[in-house]
Structure formats: C-alpha cells, structure tokens
Image 1: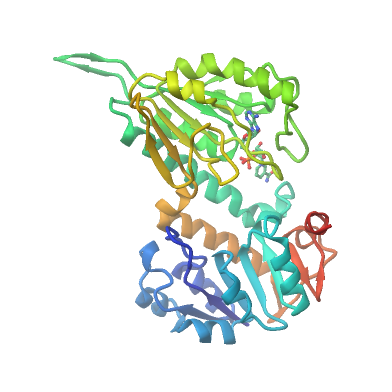
Image 2: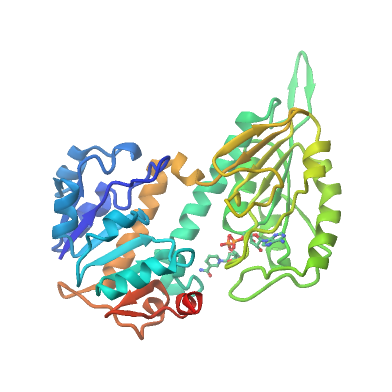
Length: 376
Ligand code: NAD
C-alpha cells in the first residue's frame, strides 16, 4: 500500500497530515510513504527527516498518481480532487457537510473519501481517530496563550515590592474539548477562571480544573451524542441577557460554542463589546464566515475597537502550534490507516460502525447518512 502525504494549499495552514514518526510506523508495517516536497516544512519537519523515517520525497503529481491513500489536513481543492482516480482513498477534514457536492463528484469517479468531520465520536474505537478533539484541544490551549499575550496586564496575581497586581479574570463560554483546555491553560497562567455551558454535564469537568462553573438558566441545553442542541429564539435571548452580566465582570472572554450542523450561537452581543473595559480581550474560536459567538468577530482577523477592546476571530488556532497539532493529527490518521489496511489491502466495510460514519463515499455511493440528508 502506498500512502501519500500532500503539502497543504490553504493560506495560513502550517500543519501536515502525517509526521515523520508515523511515517516510520507505516513503513514498518510494510507500507510505502510518499511525501510531497516541503509538505512538513511549516510544521518544522524537514524533507530529510521524512527520508530518515523511510519515506520518499516526491513532487505533487507523483504523490497523487502513485498513492493508494492520500492524506491531507484540509480539502485540497477542486484542482487536486479532479486528479484523483478510481480506487484511490482520500482522508482528511474534507469539509464534506459544507460542500457535499464535491463528495458526489468523487463518488462518480469511484474515489473513496473519508472525512473526519463525519467520524462518530462517541464510539470508543473512534476516539484514537478523532481529529476534532485533538485539534480542538490544541486550539483551546493556544487561545489562552493568545489572550494572555494580547491582554495588557498580568494573568497571575503579582505581589511585588512595587505593589500588588490583581489576577486577570477569564471567562470561557462553551466548555467542550477546546473550552476545557483553555480553562486549564488560563489556570496554569494564574488567572481566576470561570466556565459556562448549556450542558449541565460539563459542570463537574470545569470544577475539576479548579474553575467556577456559571450555571445557565437554559433548561436542558444538551442535545444528542454529548453535544448541545440549538436553542430556541427565546432561549437565545434569555441567554444573551444573562451572559451580559457575566461578560462585564471579566477581562478576557474565550468563546468556543458550537452546535453541530448549525451556525455558531451568538453569545456576546455588540453591546457587550461596546461597553467592555479598555484592554478586554475576546477570543472567538467559533468565528466563521457565517458569524461566530462574538458579534463583531471576523475569521482570521484581530480587531481593536474604538474603546480599546480586542476581538480575535480565531479560525484555525491549531495551525499556530503546527508541530504538536500535526503530531496528534498524524496519530489520528495512523489509527484510520490501521483500520483501513487489512493484510496489505484496503478494505472499507460500509457496515462497520466507525466507517459508516467516517466514510463519505465508497464504491461509487454516498454512504454517510448525514451527508445523504445534506444532499437532498
Ligand atoms: P462543540 O465543539 O460542538 O461545542 C463546544 C461547546 O459549546 C460544547 O461544550 C457545547 O455544549 C457548547 N455550547 C453549544 N451551544 C452553546 C450555547 N448556546 N451556550 C453555551 N455553550 C454552548 O463540542 P465538543 O468540544 O466537540 O464536545 C462536546 C461534548 O462531546 C463534550 O462533552 C465532549 O467531552 C464530548 N465528546 C465526546 C467524545 C467521545 O465520547 N469520544 C469525543 C469528543 C467530544
């Protein structure tokens, strides 16, 4: 089996789907690994380090022509997808639910597409493959660091001969994988931290990190599969009203709230940004072109308002810790390849619980139920 690793094409993407360590493991398991020249450079992995791990460094065309499995972080774009041939497998965050028609085009060519957004995360066998968790965790950590860097005061309390400095107050809205990591990191930096979520189940997790859990008045905000549900318009209004008070009491607000299949909920209204104290930092990990958790956030932009408040639209923070993020992503990819390759052959069993989710298309058919619904 030949596994190809492509160089990412999106601007500001520094990660690579397979690192030299996983390359070594794949080679040991009888696979050939082809790495596009420079694929790991932005993640601090040189071509030489891949060669030492047993890979061949090749040009993009060869990687695309000769790979049985093509590993990427992001959907590589139309030009690359058009070059894939029948029988090949592409694996990555293919953005399948947002652009389902691209998966149909692959199905028509009998290319198999495995898209990490579709992974059924609650199945325990899938946990080692869960890039959403591994990358969210990196992003949450980095969010706290970015906030501490922008914040014009200390995070920890400082008792010095020149006087005492109060610790920063950090509020994390949405305490899933990213939020919990942001809480842990802000705590380690010495801030006073609180967390808020509509899933009451996250209270224990927040408190175990030494942070305060702010209870939401929204009744039972849990949806299916451990995720939040979308709130009704009335609940959203009530939530924004209760959050305004919490937000005003804090110096740094990190938001991570997502509801699968919906646009991110608006948690911080414009009035909270406008009335925040100078030096307040908002980091919106849910910033997207559809809108984010913070009213004025723009993806991949940092805005400083007239009242000296910073609003960071953090679209892809994992990419700003490219070496660690790639290391974890690679392990997730390795777990998928281990499940995919049986006795030196690629076997995709469409009835297997994990593959039923992860596989967008195989054998010329769209097999993922969520994707089929999105295509209707
Ligand atoms: P996510 O990225 O979908 O959302 C982030 C957080 O935002 C969640 O905690 C969600 O409850 C919260 N949120 C959504 N709407 C909100 C609102 N209006 N107000 C406040 N908060 C809101 O979630 P995630 O980080 O991917 O994980 C969500 C849950 O799934 C967690 O409990 C996590 O532990 C669990 N999970 C389980 C597995 C597994 O079983 N293997 C894997 C991954 C995640």
